[in-house]
Structures are given as C-alpha cells and as structure tokens.
Image (cartoon, rainbow, N blue to C red; front, side):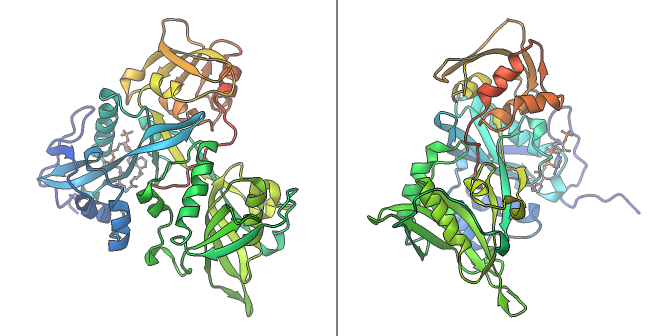
Length: 430
Ligand SMILES: CC(C)(COP(=O)(O)OP(=O)(O)OC[C@H]1O[C@@H](n2cnc3c(N)ncnc32)[C@H](O)[C@@H]1OP(=O)(O)O)[C@@H](O)C(=O)NCCC(=O)NCCS
C-alpha cells in the first residue's frame, strides 16, 4: 500500500516553523460564492440551499473575510463580521468569525491557524474591535488560540408529567396569539431590542440578522412543521413576550405526542415570560417540550416544580478572546471594585503577553494598563476569554490549576469582580 496523498497536492508542501505550509496564498474574500465550494467539502458534501445561501450571504462582509488559495483556488475560509454584543455594562463592538473551514486535502497544514492569526493581527493593527467571538463545531479546537468558553447553554426537555410550575406573578389579562414570524417581525424585533442590554452575549440584530434569527428553510425542519411565533400581549394589547418554536408530529399508542421544540423566548417582564412558557407547555398535542439552548440561569428552571425531570444538560456555547487585553478588559464593567495585576501568557497575540494592572471603581468602570508591579494572578489568554463576558469563574479555573494566585485574596476579589448576573448567553449562531 502506498502513502495516501491528497489529489490537490502534487508535492507535499513543507511547513516552515510557526507558519502555514508552502504554496498557499492568502487574500480578502471577493464574494460569498467563493466560500460555497470550500464549505460544501469541509462539512461533508452538504451544499447550502439557495434559500439558506441568500440568508447567510446577506450577512457576508467580504473585506473582513479571508480565503487561503492553493493553485489560485480557494481551499480555506474564514468569515468575519462586525457585530455589537452586550458585555457586562452594555453593548460593545466585537468581531465575530464563522465558516472557519479547510477543504479536506489541505488540513493540518496550519491554514486555520494562519487565517486566525491574520484576522487577529488586522484587528490589533487597526485598533478595531477589542474582542473576537465565535461558535465552534468542536470544543477542542480554539483553546490553543486563546479562546475561552465565554458562555454556556443548557438543553432542557420537559416531559408531559413535569409540566407543573409555580409562578408567583400576575398573568391576569395576558393573552397569546400564534402566527408566522414574518407577520410578528416588528414585535419580535422590539421585544428583543428591549431585552438586549440585560444579558451579556446577546447580539444586536439589524434586518439581515433578524432574518437569520427567524430563518425557516424546509431543509432545516427535519420532519417538523414551519416555524411558529407565539406572541403574548397585555390587557391593553401591548406585546410583552414571544416564542419561536415548531412542532414535529409523533404518536404513541394512538396518542398524540408531538415534539415541541423551542428556538427562542424573550419577554419584557417576568409575568409575560411565565405566560409564554405556560402556554408552550400547555400546547395541545404536545408531548415533550424541549429547547436545545437556554441560558444556564433560565428562569424556566426556577418556575418548574420538577426541574430534574427536564434533564438540564450544560454545554459550552460562545467562545471569546481578547484581541487587545487592555481595550477588552476596559470595554466591560465589573461587579465589584478590584485592583489586581494580571500576568498573562498569549502565544497567539504576543502583544498581550506581560503584566497588566486592572483597576475597577465602585461603579464598575475599569482601566487596564501595562505595569511593572509584581503579579497577583498568572493566567492565559484562554482564561481571560472564559471570564470576559461575566460567565466562567477564576476560582474554578484556579482550582483546575489553570490560574495561579500569587497574592492571597487577589483570586477571590478578581473572581467576584469578573462575574456577572445574569449569565452570558448567545442564541444567535454565525
Ligand atoms: C477544523 C479545521 C478548520 C482545522 O483546519 P486546519 O487547517 O486543519 O487546522 P491547522 O492545521 O491550522 O491546525 C492548528 C491546530 O489545531 C488543531 N486542530 C485542527 N483541527 C482540530 C480539531 N477538529 N480538533 C482539535 N484540534 C484541531 C491541529 O491539530 C493544530 O494543533 P497544534 O497547533 O497543536 O499542532 C478543519 O479541519 C475543518 O475545516 N473542519 C471541518 C469544519 C469545522 O469543523 N470548522 C470549525 C468551525 S468552528
């Protein structure tokens, strides 16, 4: 048996130390269509449908997106997005990346690393967004590049026998209506906008991102019906909450046990929130009511009398890293005053390596500057990423041996200051 060699690879490229293999060129993307062939191959021969391509293509920002070429043809991609995301303290510009994909013959030659290095270096040199965020297909990929798990999501499945809940709120006069997300578009946008500043991780949505949020291509339904929108309104007719969900028909011994899956729920107040969930759980024909991703501190878990039966399962969700440590750490607010010297290791963005003094006042406002003072905590860029949005815990990371405390008391103070209530959550994929 001879050695298996990639067809597109006439001569095994030589990978110089620290860089990608020889023979590759890198440039800004020209148009969304360039990504199609690479993504199709990278994700196992599932080309985007024209409808889905139109939705994600409308979000495409060619100047921020990169391709690697071999023999003049794109073989690796990285899409960049200028986003605005709520951090502790309010909305901040962040750089999103997605569609990091390398065609199979060109893998493990350093192309992903080089695309990321270029994207991060450009943001640093242009003093653009101070934070980079992404959703990862696999959890093992991005830690080495200084990304930490910045938010977690919890999956819940409420079986019919565990639908009871206790809401000590006044839902009198609330009514619900069900229609299409398109018809409820303005209501969805308004309620989402009202909720946006409250939870780190939420993304501002313009019309194109809103379209992505309510996208409902038939290929994505997997046997379920079309996406529905439930709107809850108050006695005066004012819309106060909504849910996006769908039903997949299923029968058990001649009884309807439709699977109701919830994509999104937002509400202006606790009564509307409880009413939306009560209405979802009371849906006729429904068996199990599930949601693949909810915040880890979702009020639903406090409303259910038997949250154990909902089998909450936590997983990593958004990954974040500081592009420039000083700008990233001063872009957010802190939950308690803190004055701490961080010694940071950052191989991917070496300009962040060194000692930084982070000082936050009683209002949560912070400054972060280089210092020669002795370090209080030693940690990596990945650990900073894990606490950047107010989730994660420096104490937990220290107990895992990833953060080292050099001044007694510094760990607890910094951990408290970084934490944020409510927990970060990013339901929008990109
Ligand atoms: C994941 C993917 C982008 C990696 O691209 P690549 O060019 O082969 O990656 P690189 O050669 O730059 O690898 C850089 C490092 O990441 C590691 N790595 C690459 N893919 C990995 C994976 N799937 N899981 C864990 N580690 C991975 C490499 O081993 C290498 O580690 P090292 O620096 O310690 O030696 C590519 O395999 C791919 O397109 N996969 C399918 C699409 C996908 O999952 N994309 C990720 C979207 S978030």
